Image (cartoon, rainbow, N blue to C red; front, side, top):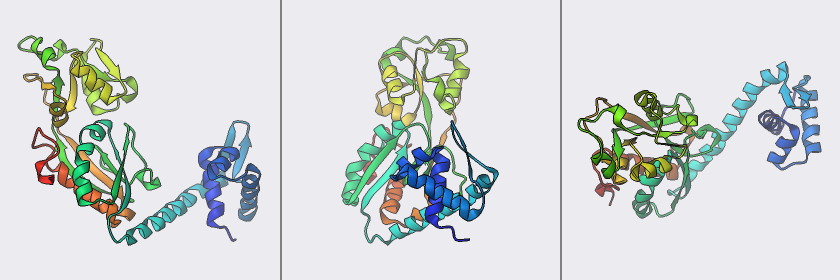
Length: 300
């Protein structure tokens, strides 16, 4: 039985998109062509792969059996292409780095002049949100995360743990009673959709029945609210100091340090532009917990 990679690619596109029309649009081919190719694939394998419903495509038992093998072929194809990128002689080109919003604003931009001096042909593209990018699908080249990856396709480098603090504006801190208790604080908090974030879970425990002073799904909006005196929020200590906020000391709580991991696809580990950025960011982050200034003087 002769089944080509192109046939498998169309099958996966239809599986992910949920309809032939959506898959055809994603691949830039006509729907009639897509339908014909899927029908030909089903004829070759001797099984119907999709049940067609008004609501979309549903994998049959045969389609479900084929899917993990097709995903494996796709992963192998991505690794094959990625391995060819390692033939670059010098660090050159675009490197996409996925980081949380706070790091994207506070830490990465100040590093760029030093990065450009070392590697003038590298251009950084920063992807910033609260959701993990799929590196195996090449949604980014490098990610900085607070959780260690488990996939064998990924390599990680543990960065120094980040110290946390509870911060507010100087005016707000000056108005607090002495001694201050957690229940005295007005909280700047993440929106309900982001309560899976450890910082947010802690605040939920501490605030009890007291309403939040401000909520948002934007880290930057929250920090601005704290800077305007609306209340207190949990922040990495370096970022709190860089924002001009003041730590609230004397609270009966001990915040854990947060681990950070720099993650990349195993197949990209020898690609010069990716390896150069990994080494540079790791060097910078070695100093992130030792100073209230940024970028580190060692990178000058």
